[in-house]
Image (cartoon, rainbow, N blue to C red):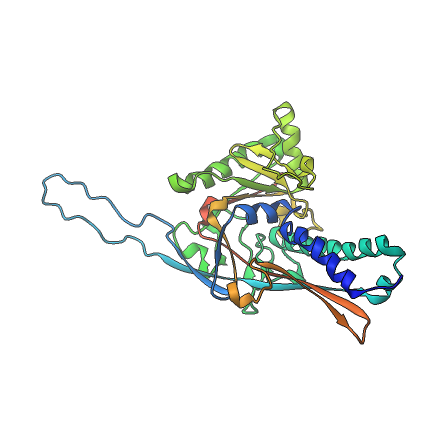
Length: 360
């Protein structure tokens, strides 16, 4: 059939708002943190934020009335930093495919399929990078996995957030601050020997250790993301105690809720995140996470930011669509998804990692 560029533009204008609105859906970790994390704008790609990792003062007890109140700071606040990466996913639609479409319905279906597949692939890469690392094309995105690195601005690799050792042995530099150089700048960690032996016990210990650090202002850990083996071991252990969580699915949401809803663990929702690949051939070089990984996230300690006006986004948000642009010499229509996103945590000790849960 004859192809008109006006049909291409009109169709994309109709379907793209749905894609941009649901950009973060499908992958539990990516979606939940973006949905619940604290959001802010930066004046550029770099942001500096303050940390108060411990108590900033002390108490003076008055007895005789002659005591001098101790008002000096026992601990200096720290300044940490993070960068927002700008990533562009580009794809081309051959002009010949559009011209040879079998009728208008086939043409419209083809126009819709390309951005859908592109969005799925972009999401998959970002989710894998976040929970496991090792995704070169989106390696600017932060990763949880300390066996991998990320480099948001070409200024040198930075390690992933969660180390697979106890708090006292953690030493990586995260957001510009070395863990063993600042009091309370660490995350909680536990290792399961086998799920049947101490699986729920170790998860509960890590959950409690992280949650009590939140104090009255933050409360408990609210999100957990597990690999398939650990998640299924937990389900099997629960049996008739299983509680499915309907995570506020909106009317008209196309997500498969039975798979995505998650289950309760104490005060948190535990999700299966299928991009956490364990085993010797997975994303983890350390032996402990090869036997299962659970991330415990306190969403109130995680912040998301974009580059603001410096990102030159076409929309008011942090995710934009560009195109179509016709490449005359290649007979291609080019499109781009553009994402500006940075993430940081300002209270690591309210979060945890547990390994070993995939061992039955």
